[in-house]
Image (cartoon, rainbow, N blue to C red; front, top):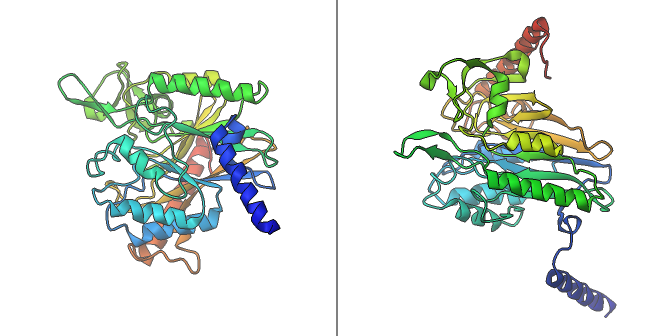
Length: 391
């Protein structure tokens, strides 16, 4: 009888909480540092799968989760690339089976490849799955699904960290319908970020809450930092921005740590997102996908650009690498983070790995050693130049 009464009272309290609503960011938080003060994020960028979903894709997701043991998974855009609705179920049901909550941003291919679904409808579909933390903080904002996820301290007493999710859109065109380039985080989203950041700061007794931001497309400022500028716009031979500036595709290897196997495809315009984050002072880094076989980190005026390789098995450049990024934060010093990439080539070397249905064992092994050799070569090269070395 006592047990029945306890269950009844718990149910009444739960209903009461729902009716009252959430009072603060702390109450809204569904994520938390563990008992050791650790919090892990697994980033899956550019799943970009068709249907049927490759067996190795699902296996890679499972083995990445098993290896990293994350507290949350972030899908970094270009998540589904087919008109077949079964692909959504295959991917998101697989995520549900991991038992790890997840959220997502949209990329440039999601709407154009989802059988007529709008960006709003895709976000609603994401929200329908059991493990999803996806929501749209303000449907009036540019795009769909821009939101944030507070992370509680291990004792649950305060919000100790925050995750920003920005929809940076897809494409922009001129008045004649000619393609200009890729979209960007717009002014109204930046105003939303400023407002929410200030509200969280006030909730936190006036102290900033450290954060990491996630979006699909690399913004303008990192490209200006990484690539050699050009005095002239040479069309497709240069990266050209709305403000009239141009950059070559030649990277300055001293400006970043890691490697680029693909030319970068940044946003065409800029409404001041990077400057707002610099002024805000809370953002440690911005995680992007979009450029499938690039894996690097660059300090851009105090904020890291964290490029994550895609985990797609159908890249239109090459299948040299499928990757997932792991980000680790400890609440003793949440203003610093550590990160590394897992690759399918690496996981396939583990005894008992289920990878090998869509690529041969030889391919996984060959590209595993090629990647190791290339990383070693880049580190030696940077050492000689006095540049950035990345493990």
